[in-house]
Image (cartoon, rainbow, N blue to C red):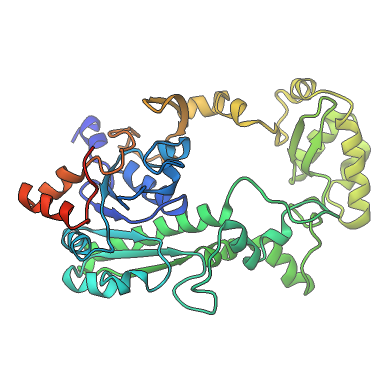
Length: 401
Protein backbone atom coordinates (compact mmCIF):
# COMPACT_ATOMS: atom_id res chain seq x y z
CA UNK A 1 0.00 0.00 0.00
CA UNK A 2 1.51 3.35 -0.99
CA UNK A 3 1.90 6.29 1.33
CA UNK A 4 -0.87 8.31 -0.36
CA UNK A 5 -3.31 5.49 0.30
CA UNK A 6 -2.14 5.22 3.90
CA UNK A 7 -2.72 8.92 4.53
CA UNK A 8 -6.35 8.55 3.52
CA UNK A 9 -6.82 5.77 6.09
CA UNK A 10 -6.91 7.77 9.31
CA UNK A 11 -6.51 5.83 12.52
CA UNK A 12 -10.14 6.22 13.61
CA UNK A 13 -11.80 5.91 10.20
CA UNK A 14 -15.04 3.95 10.55
CA UNK A 15 -15.52 4.84 14.22
CA UNK A 16 -18.83 6.59 14.90
CA UNK A 17 -19.02 8.92 17.92
CA UNK A 18 -22.20 10.43 19.35
CA UNK A 19 -21.18 13.63 21.14
CA UNK A 20 -23.67 14.96 23.70
CA UNK A 21 -21.19 17.34 25.31
CA UNK A 22 -20.95 21.13 25.20
CA UNK A 23 -18.72 24.00 26.28
CA UNK A 24 -15.00 23.04 26.30
CA UNK A 25 -13.90 19.68 27.80
CA UNK A 26 -16.04 17.22 25.83
CA UNK A 27 -15.96 19.09 22.49
CA UNK A 28 -12.16 19.32 22.71
CA UNK A 29 -12.02 15.57 23.34
CA UNK A 30 -14.22 14.77 20.34
CA UNK A 31 -12.30 17.28 18.22
CA UNK A 32 -9.22 15.11 18.65
CA UNK A 33 -11.24 12.03 17.72
CA UNK A 34 -12.70 13.77 14.67
CA UNK A 35 -9.31 14.98 13.49
CA UNK A 36 -8.07 11.38 13.65
CA UNK A 37 -10.88 10.28 11.36
CA UNK A 38 -13.80 9.42 13.62
CA UNK A 39 -17.26 10.35 12.41
CA UNK A 40 -18.45 12.69 15.17
CA UNK A 41 -22.14 13.57 15.38
CA UNK A 42 -22.64 16.59 17.62
CA UNK A 43 -26.04 16.27 19.26
CA UNK A 44 -27.33 19.65 20.45
CA UNK A 45 -30.49 21.02 21.95
CA UNK A 46 -32.78 22.48 19.25
CA UNK A 47 -33.24 25.52 21.50
CA UNK A 48 -29.91 27.25 21.24
CA UNK A 49 -27.53 24.36 20.82
CA UNK A 50 -24.11 24.36 22.45
CA UNK A 51 -23.85 27.53 24.60
CA UNK A 52 -20.38 28.11 23.13
CA UNK A 53 -22.10 29.00 19.85
CA UNK A 54 -22.70 32.45 21.29
CA UNK A 55 -25.28 34.53 23.08
CA UNK A 56 -27.99 33.98 20.47
CA UNK A 57 -27.51 30.22 20.70
CA UNK A 58 -27.29 29.51 17.00
CA UNK A 59 -24.19 31.35 15.81
CA UNK A 60 -20.49 30.71 15.43
CA UNK A 61 -18.31 32.16 18.17
CA UNK A 62 -14.53 31.95 17.71
CA UNK A 63 -14.36 29.20 20.33
CA UNK A 64 -17.09 27.19 18.61
CA UNK A 65 -15.26 27.47 15.30
CA UNK A 66 -12.06 26.17 16.89
CA UNK A 67 -13.70 23.21 18.63
CA UNK A 68 -16.17 21.85 16.10
CA UNK A 69 -14.58 21.30 12.71
CA UNK A 70 -14.90 17.84 11.17
CA UNK A 71 -18.23 17.25 12.95
CA UNK A 72 -21.89 17.08 11.92
CA UNK A 73 -24.71 18.62 13.94
CA UNK A 74 -28.02 17.00 14.87
CA UNK A 75 -30.44 19.24 16.79
CA UNK A 76 -32.32 16.74 18.94
CA UNK A 77 -34.53 17.25 21.99
CA UNK A 78 -33.64 14.33 24.25
CA UNK A 79 -36.34 15.31 26.74
CA UNK A 80 -39.04 14.14 24.36
CA UNK A 81 -39.77 10.43 24.04
CA UNK A 82 -39.34 10.74 20.27
CA UNK A 83 -35.95 12.44 20.59
CA UNK A 84 -34.74 9.83 23.05
CA UNK A 85 -35.90 7.18 20.60
CA UNK A 86 -33.78 8.71 17.85
CA UNK A 87 -30.72 8.62 20.09
CA UNK A 88 -31.36 4.99 20.97
CA UNK A 89 -31.52 4.13 17.29
CA UNK A 90 -28.31 6.01 16.54
CA UNK A 91 -26.57 4.37 19.50
CA UNK A 92 -27.26 0.89 18.11
CA UNK A 93 -24.81 1.57 15.30
CA UNK A 94 -22.36 3.78 17.18
CA UNK A 95 -19.01 2.88 18.67
CA UNK A 96 -18.73 5.67 21.25
CA UNK A 97 -21.08 8.00 23.11
CA UNK A 98 -19.62 10.92 25.07
CA UNK A 99 -21.75 12.88 27.54
CA UNK A 100 -21.23 15.55 30.16
CA UNK A 101 -24.49 15.60 32.12
CA UNK A 102 -24.62 15.33 35.89
CA UNK A 103 -24.74 11.71 37.09
CA UNK A 104 -28.19 10.17 36.67
CA UNK A 105 -29.57 12.57 34.05
CA UNK A 106 -29.34 10.15 31.13
CA UNK A 107 -30.66 7.31 33.28
CA UNK A 108 -33.79 9.34 34.00
CA UNK A 109 -34.25 9.83 30.24
CA UNK A 110 -33.92 6.09 29.66
CA UNK A 111 -30.57 6.66 27.96
CA UNK A 112 -28.13 5.47 30.59
CA UNK A 113 -24.99 3.50 29.84
CA UNK A 114 -26.40 0.13 30.92
CA UNK A 115 -29.55 0.62 28.87
CA UNK A 116 -27.73 1.65 25.69
CA UNK A 117 -25.11 -1.06 26.00
CA UNK A 118 -27.81 -3.68 26.49
CA UNK A 119 -28.83 -2.96 22.89
CA UNK A 120 -25.29 -2.42 21.61
CA UNK A 121 -22.81 -4.40 23.74
CA UNK A 122 -19.75 -2.96 21.96
CA UNK A 123 -20.71 0.65 22.72
CA UNK A 124 -18.22 2.68 24.77
CA UNK A 125 -19.96 5.32 26.90
CA UNK A 126 -17.77 8.05 28.38
CA UNK A 127 -19.19 10.31 31.08
CA UNK A 128 -17.23 13.50 31.75
CA UNK A 129 -18.08 15.25 35.02
CA UNK A 130 -16.39 17.47 37.54
CA UNK A 131 -16.31 15.04 40.45
CA UNK A 132 -17.25 11.64 39.02
CA UNK A 133 -20.24 9.33 39.20
CA UNK A 134 -20.06 8.86 42.98
CA UNK A 135 -18.80 10.55 46.13
CA UNK A 136 -20.27 13.41 48.18
CA UNK A 137 -19.64 16.01 45.45
CA UNK A 138 -20.93 13.95 42.52
CA UNK A 139 -24.02 16.17 42.10
CA UNK A 140 -22.27 19.46 42.80
CA UNK A 141 -21.88 22.11 40.13
CA UNK A 142 -18.40 23.30 39.28
CA UNK A 143 -15.97 24.61 36.73
CA UNK A 144 -12.26 24.23 36.07
CA UNK A 145 -11.32 26.59 38.91
CA UNK A 146 -13.28 24.49 41.41
CA UNK A 147 -11.75 21.20 40.25
CA UNK A 148 -8.23 22.63 40.51
CA UNK A 149 -9.10 23.97 43.96
CA UNK A 150 -10.33 20.63 45.31
CA UNK A 151 -7.38 18.74 43.79
CA UNK A 152 -4.78 20.93 45.51
CA UNK A 153 -3.51 22.35 42.23
CA UNK A 154 -4.82 25.91 42.50
CA UNK A 155 -3.16 26.41 45.88
CA UNK A 156 0.24 25.92 44.21
CA UNK A 157 -0.43 28.35 41.33
CA UNK A 158 0.96 31.83 41.84
CA UNK A 159 3.81 33.78 43.36
CA UNK A 160 5.21 33.73 46.86
CA UNK A 161 3.30 35.98 49.22
CA UNK A 162 0.33 36.36 46.88
CA UNK A 163 -2.98 34.55 46.48
CA UNK A 164 -3.71 31.69 44.09
CA UNK A 165 -3.38 32.73 40.44
CA UNK A 166 -6.19 32.07 38.00
CA UNK A 167 -4.54 31.01 34.76
CA UNK A 168 -6.13 31.29 31.31
CA UNK A 169 -5.37 27.66 30.56
CA UNK A 170 -8.10 25.49 32.14
CA UNK A 171 -5.93 22.60 33.27
CA UNK A 172 -8.67 20.40 34.71
CA UNK A 173 -10.97 20.86 31.71
CA UNK A 174 -8.25 19.99 29.22
CA UNK A 175 -5.98 17.52 31.03
CA UNK A 176 -9.05 15.86 32.52
CA UNK A 177 -12.18 16.39 30.49
CA UNK A 178 -10.41 16.36 27.13
CA UNK A 179 -7.15 14.40 27.11
CA UNK A 180 -7.90 11.90 29.89
CA UNK A 181 -11.33 11.30 28.40
CA UNK A 182 -9.81 10.65 24.98
CA UNK A 183 -7.32 8.26 26.55
CA UNK A 184 -10.08 6.36 28.35
CA UNK A 185 -12.23 6.22 25.23
CA UNK A 186 -9.41 4.89 23.08
CA UNK A 187 -8.43 2.26 25.66
CA UNK A 188 -12.04 1.05 25.98
CA UNK A 189 -12.51 1.17 22.21
CA UNK A 190 -9.39 -0.94 21.70
CA UNK A 191 -10.72 -3.52 24.15
CA UNK A 192 -14.17 -3.47 22.53
CA UNK A 193 -12.59 -4.24 19.16
CA UNK A 194 -10.96 -7.32 20.70
CA UNK A 195 -13.77 -8.57 22.92
CA UNK A 196 -16.95 -7.10 21.48
CA UNK A 197 -17.76 -5.62 24.89
CA UNK A 198 -17.83 -1.89 25.54
CA UNK A 199 -17.39 -0.17 28.86
CA UNK A 200 -18.62 2.83 30.82
CA UNK A 201 -15.69 5.25 31.21
CA UNK A 202 -16.11 7.47 34.28
CA UNK A 203 -13.98 10.61 33.90
CA UNK A 204 -13.86 13.03 36.84
CA UNK A 205 -11.91 16.16 35.98
CA UNK A 206 -10.89 16.55 39.62
CA UNK A 207 -9.46 13.02 39.66
CA UNK A 208 -7.54 13.59 36.45
CA UNK A 209 -5.92 16.87 37.39
CA UNK A 210 -5.07 15.48 40.83
CA UNK A 211 -3.40 12.42 39.31
CA UNK A 212 -1.03 14.75 37.45
CA UNK A 213 -0.19 16.95 40.45
CA UNK A 214 3.19 15.27 40.85
CA UNK A 215 5.60 18.06 41.80
CA UNK A 216 3.68 19.48 44.76
CA UNK A 217 2.75 16.03 46.05
CA UNK A 218 6.36 14.91 45.82
CA UNK A 219 7.32 17.85 48.03
CA UNK A 220 4.49 16.95 50.42
CA UNK A 221 5.74 13.34 50.60
CA UNK A 222 9.25 14.57 51.39
CA UNK A 223 8.38 17.11 54.07
CA UNK A 224 4.96 16.11 55.35
CA UNK A 225 3.40 19.46 54.49
CA UNK A 226 2.41 21.42 51.40
CA UNK A 227 5.19 23.55 49.93
CA UNK A 228 4.61 27.31 50.25
CA UNK A 229 3.09 28.83 47.12
CA UNK A 230 5.79 30.00 44.74
CA UNK A 231 8.60 28.27 46.64
CA UNK A 232 8.72 24.74 45.25
CA UNK A 233 11.25 23.33 42.81
CA UNK A 234 9.43 24.54 39.68
CA UNK A 235 7.19 27.26 41.08
CA UNK A 236 9.75 29.93 41.93
CA UNK A 237 11.97 28.51 44.63
CA UNK A 238 15.08 28.19 42.44
CA UNK A 239 16.96 30.88 40.53
CA UNK A 240 17.64 28.53 37.61
CA UNK A 241 13.95 28.07 36.79
CA UNK A 242 11.64 31.01 36.38
CA UNK A 243 10.40 34.02 34.44
CA UNK A 244 12.34 37.27 34.63
CA UNK A 245 11.20 40.77 33.67
CA UNK A 246 13.20 42.64 31.05
CA UNK A 247 13.74 46.41 30.89
CA UNK A 248 10.89 46.82 28.38
CA UNK A 249 8.33 45.00 30.50
CA UNK A 250 8.57 41.68 28.67
CA UNK A 251 9.66 38.37 30.20
CA UNK A 252 12.42 35.84 29.63
CA UNK A 253 11.77 32.22 30.61
CA UNK A 254 14.82 30.45 32.02
CA UNK A 255 14.48 26.69 32.47
CA UNK A 256 18.14 25.87 33.14
CA UNK A 257 17.69 23.00 35.59
CA UNK A 258 20.69 20.96 34.44
CA UNK A 259 24.02 22.40 35.57
CA UNK A 260 25.41 22.67 32.04
CA UNK A 261 22.49 24.88 31.04
CA UNK A 262 22.71 26.96 34.19
CA UNK A 263 26.41 27.57 33.63
CA UNK A 264 25.64 28.70 30.08
CA UNK A 265 23.09 31.17 31.48
CA UNK A 266 25.58 32.51 34.00
CA UNK A 267 28.28 32.80 31.33
CA UNK A 268 25.95 34.79 29.08
CA UNK A 269 25.03 37.07 31.97
CA UNK A 270 28.69 37.49 32.92
CA UNK A 271 27.92 36.10 36.37
CA UNK A 272 30.04 33.00 36.86
CA UNK A 273 29.91 33.74 40.58
CA UNK A 274 26.34 32.38 40.50
CA UNK A 275 27.32 28.91 39.27
CA UNK A 276 26.72 27.33 42.66
CA UNK A 277 23.64 29.37 43.59
CA UNK A 278 21.12 28.45 40.90
CA UNK A 279 19.82 25.39 42.70
CA UNK A 280 19.72 26.70 46.25
CA UNK A 281 16.38 26.71 48.02
CA UNK A 282 14.89 28.84 50.77
CA UNK A 283 16.27 32.28 51.55
CA UNK A 284 19.53 31.65 49.69
CA UNK A 285 17.58 30.72 46.59
CA UNK A 286 15.55 33.91 46.75
CA UNK A 287 18.71 36.01 47.07
CA UNK A 288 20.15 34.33 43.96
CA UNK A 289 16.90 34.80 42.13
CA UNK A 290 16.91 38.51 42.95
CA UNK A 291 20.42 38.82 41.53
CA UNK A 292 19.37 37.17 38.28
CA UNK A 293 16.28 39.39 38.14
CA UNK A 294 18.45 42.49 38.50
CA UNK A 295 20.68 41.35 35.63
CA UNK A 296 17.77 40.56 33.30
CA UNK A 297 16.13 43.90 34.08
CA UNK A 298 19.10 45.75 32.55
CA UNK A 299 18.22 44.90 28.93
CA UNK A 300 15.22 44.59 26.64
CA UNK A 301 13.82 41.27 25.56
CA UNK A 302 15.20 41.76 22.05
CA UNK A 303 18.67 42.41 23.45
CA UNK A 304 18.56 39.30 25.59
CA UNK A 305 17.38 37.15 22.70
CA UNK A 306 20.34 38.40 20.70
CA UNK A 307 22.68 37.64 23.62
CA UNK A 308 21.34 34.09 23.98
CA UNK A 309 21.20 33.41 20.25
CA UNK A 310 23.08 30.15 19.67
CA UNK A 311 23.46 29.50 23.42
CA UNK A 312 22.14 26.07 24.45
CA UNK A 313 20.66 27.10 27.78
CA UNK A 314 16.86 26.51 27.82
CA UNK A 315 16.10 30.22 27.52
CA UNK A 316 13.10 31.47 25.54
CA UNK A 317 10.96 34.58 25.27
CA UNK A 318 7.53 34.57 26.90
CA UNK A 319 5.45 35.10 23.79
CA UNK A 320 2.00 36.61 23.41
CA UNK A 321 -0.54 34.61 21.39
CA UNK A 322 -0.11 36.87 18.36
CA UNK A 323 3.64 36.18 18.46
CA UNK A 324 3.33 32.48 19.21
CA UNK A 325 1.14 31.67 16.20
CA UNK A 326 3.72 33.27 13.90
CA UNK A 327 6.81 31.75 15.51
CA UNK A 328 9.09 29.87 13.05
CA UNK A 329 8.89 26.66 15.10
CA UNK A 330 5.09 26.74 15.08
CA UNK A 331 5.11 27.49 11.35
CA UNK A 332 7.50 24.61 10.65
CA UNK A 333 5.19 22.20 12.45
CA UNK A 334 2.08 23.62 10.81
CA UNK A 335 0.34 24.03 14.15
CA UNK A 336 -1.35 27.41 13.68
CA UNK A 337 -3.84 27.22 10.82
CA UNK A 338 -5.48 30.32 9.42
CA UNK A 339 -9.11 29.86 8.43
CA UNK A 340 -12.11 31.88 7.37
CA UNK A 341 -15.84 31.47 7.88
CA UNK A 342 -18.96 33.40 7.03
CA UNK A 343 -19.13 34.40 10.70
CA UNK A 344 -15.44 35.33 11.03
CA UNK A 345 -13.30 36.39 8.11
CA UNK A 346 -9.98 35.37 9.61
CA UNK A 347 -9.21 33.29 12.68
CA UNK A 348 -6.55 30.96 14.02
CA UNK A 349 -7.19 27.36 14.85
CA UNK A 350 -4.73 24.68 15.84
CA UNK A 351 -3.90 21.57 13.87
CA UNK A 352 -4.18 18.13 15.41
CA UNK A 353 -1.07 17.92 17.64
CA UNK A 354 -0.69 14.17 17.16
CA UNK A 355 1.90 13.26 14.55
CA UNK A 356 2.18 9.73 13.24
CA UNK A 357 3.37 8.05 10.09
CA UNK A 358 0.79 7.70 7.34
CA UNK A 359 -1.43 10.40 8.81
CA UNK A 360 -1.87 13.95 7.62
CA UNK A 361 -4.11 16.45 9.37
CA UNK A 362 -6.89 17.90 7.27
CA UNK A 363 -10.19 19.73 7.64
CA UNK A 364 -12.88 17.77 5.84
CA UNK A 365 -15.85 19.67 7.24
CA UNK A 366 -16.24 23.23 8.50
CA UNK A 367 -17.96 23.73 11.87
CA UNK A 368 -21.67 22.98 11.35
CA UNK A 369 -24.65 25.25 11.84
CA UNK A 370 -27.10 24.09 14.49
CA UNK A 371 -29.01 21.13 13.06
CA UNK A 372 -27.35 21.47 9.68
CA UNK A 373 -27.20 17.71 9.22
CA UNK A 374 -30.56 16.71 10.71
CA UNK A 375 -32.15 15.39 7.53
CA UNK A 376 -29.01 13.68 6.26
CA UNK A 377 -28.30 11.91 9.55
CA UNK A 378 -31.89 10.82 10.09
CA UNK A 379 -32.14 9.52 6.54
CA UNK A 380 -28.98 7.51 7.11
CA UNK A 381 -30.61 6.08 10.23
CA UNK A 382 -33.63 4.94 8.20
CA UNK A 383 -36.13 7.75 8.79
CA UNK A 384 -38.14 8.75 5.73
CA UNK A 385 -39.60 12.22 5.09
CA UNK A 386 -42.86 11.42 6.84
CA UNK A 387 -41.09 10.12 9.93
CA UNK A 388 -38.88 13.21 10.06
CA UNK A 389 -41.94 15.47 9.83
CA UNK A 390 -43.52 13.51 12.67
CA UNK A 391 -40.43 14.07 14.79
CA UNK A 392 -40.66 17.80 14.14
CA UNK A 393 -44.32 17.88 15.13
CA UNK A 394 -43.45 16.06 18.34
CA UNK A 395 -40.87 18.73 19.23
CA UNK A 396 -37.94 16.34 18.92
CA UNK A 397 -36.30 18.34 16.12
CA UNK A 398 -35.63 21.96 15.31
CA UNK A 399 -38.00 23.60 12.89
CA UNK A 400 -36.24 24.32 9.58
CA UNK A 401 -35.34 27.86 8.60
